[in-house]
Image 1 (cartoon, rainbow, N blue to C red):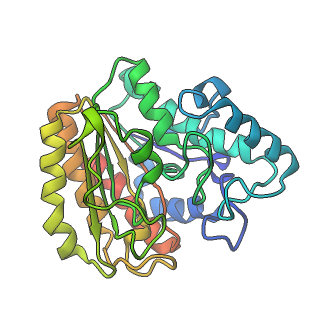
Image 2: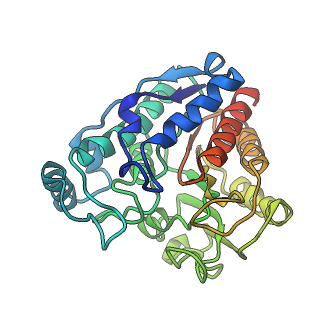
Length: 310
């Protein structure tokens, strides 16, 4: 497997003291080296994507807007959660580019599993930023997979926040199998992801939203997780994407869920097994959210360890 790590990837962050600060990557990597996992995984070098690759998902008008505000470093890229900063375009392009580079390595047969810790920016829409997410690397990845002739994709999201940018961008796409365990939108941003949201048109029934009550713990997770496995299995995907947000773990400063990092290891292990069964082993995991540094370090190293063992 490959784990992406490097200074360019850490550049995606909104300053010291911000929940999504540049120190998140280092917190993860310290735990990687403490456990010796850095010597067991292959290392991927962060790389920027091209403007043409961004345009697989994002509108040209929005890309140009980010480029402009990246030069000025002024204002917000959304309504007030996602501030611009000098170089924000380049930083966002590295997130997307690293995920796409992981895909290229998988397509080339260099590996089957990839983890990109600073990625999984699942709130960004095709034409706007949202919730600390400038470019939606997951959306670009899904569109890039189609360019490689891989249409049937399963996306599983265990971040505390609903993956609305992915969901609504592919709500009517029957080939995207979407399963999302998240804190109920009545209590947490972005306020979406009701159980009744199951896709539209030809995609009706291809989307599974599992909102959880605040305080949901590992027992609650294990009560619903079999539904995710059954849903993914029924979809017979050709490729699996995991968004392993660590903000669903107890002690996160901006959410209310009470999972332990064991949830992330379990989800990864089971999805790797499904990838082996249906997808020639092909799976990309992204770090997603998580604003308690100790939590994200434990959760993401658990993802890596599970990928290595699978």
